[in-house]
Image 1: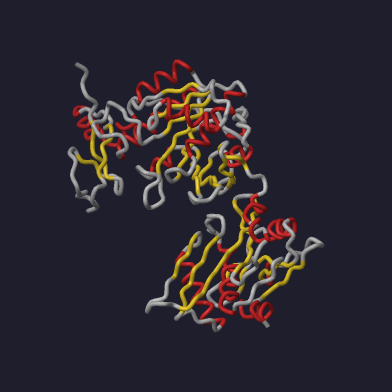
Image 2: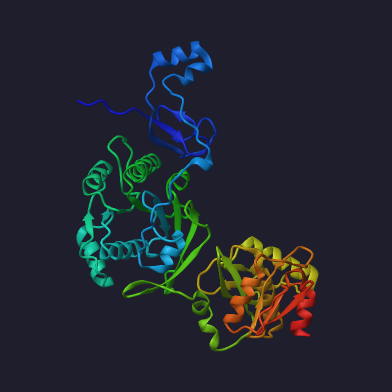
Length: 465
């Protein structure tokens, strides 16, 4: 009978090791943070010898390795694998890098399995071998989804398995160019006693898949579930193990999804790709600004402003909607969708102090149209203008775009790459751009007028007289 591999229980917060599981970590005091992991083999005799020999004994068994200069290193980047989905390739930095490991996360039903099944079908259609490992669905369920999508996925090799050793043995035998594991929370190794999905199992399985990818040259995609806090389920180190982390964002009731790269060792981070959900699956959207501004052709009410955000290297126009209404209860509400609630509270305080707009008796509702999250401060000016427009009940100009960060003194600060944002606004038919005084570019497109504004008080005087 083979001896069981020794395991330890490691705290995910402080990293302390314990021989047995406990509900509380004695080192840092956190609860429910101990996860089972494989322990590194270490003999008692070796430990005693090291204690006697001192620090020099830690180098025993090693050898002097060559250290070439960077200028002497030769070689070129491997040819990337194009999937045929332009937005997907764009987020990855130009395609799939052989031997890389990509983590795809998102809420349930957002489209993670759908997009990866489409990728597998596209690759097989180009003669690139793929292996789709399904741990959550049966082969029949995967086939039914493929039939609904109408993709040419009949040649995709399918493996319904959750045991890691079987997955690696099958992949080593078939030698695919791309392997998709859906999902990492269902895969387990027999070397650990914990149930699939716990911290130890997820970390160990991810580490072995990463090692397989580097040794074999197979690009590995793993699907990761998202917790209530919005992070990938399992240890945070899972995101440090992989080469690329992709997040699927969007509301389940909307027909478009945003794929965002939060980490990429082979390309720029914070790149986004926009997809539209249809009966034929996820279709790439080449012009996201036209998609998010398409609904502004109807009724033009107060409380609506347009801003241009820079997602990675791509400028994108978004509509921000605000509604300030009389509070029906004692404590006014502050509801923000797609915008940081603490940032909204800051802007409300600035508008009260610097512009004389009091929201003490008003409910405030803020929404970024399209389910997109505004992360950079360049959208502050649009939020402030939308809030003032709702309070005064006067619509803002339909062809105006607002770019700027609002400081605590009410001043409008400069934003980065304002030229590219203004050029995108001009392309979408905007005729005036309100920016901070220091953001006015030297070269302005001929079809748009740029207004430099010192603070929000001056902006409101220009807009509402």
